[in-house]
Image (tube, rainbow, N blue to C red; front, side, top):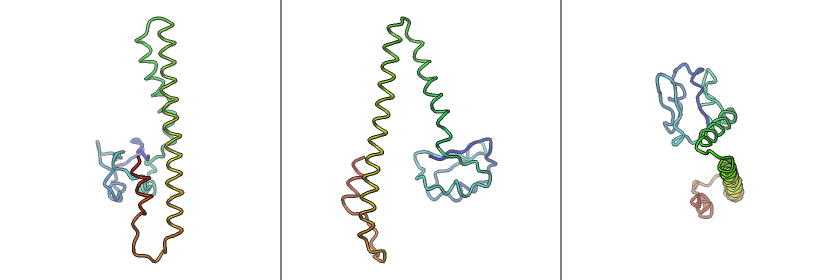
Length: 143
């Protein structure tokens, strides 16, 4: 998910203008990407003259730190070592579950990609019909 580094955004509005789904808005004269509307097309990356539109991977250290802060804040609610140990074990289970969800999601995305490639290879490029096959729609709907 692209994001906008506020310190680098000059508020020129080029990204807002070029966004085909109107997912970019202004907030205090700085561009802001609405995550729910963004289709991850990458146009905003390409058009920003200040390189203020950044990549998700740059957020990893911040997201890890947010998670650690969250765990540390919750940990304050436990008094004994055994309560704290049990809480830490639950948090590990929570993040292991999140990893499992991500892994299974990536596996499903691979299936969608494979189906898409199969469908594309069977489709005549000159065909005016560009609707997805039913099997592809079912994979997407399974989400």
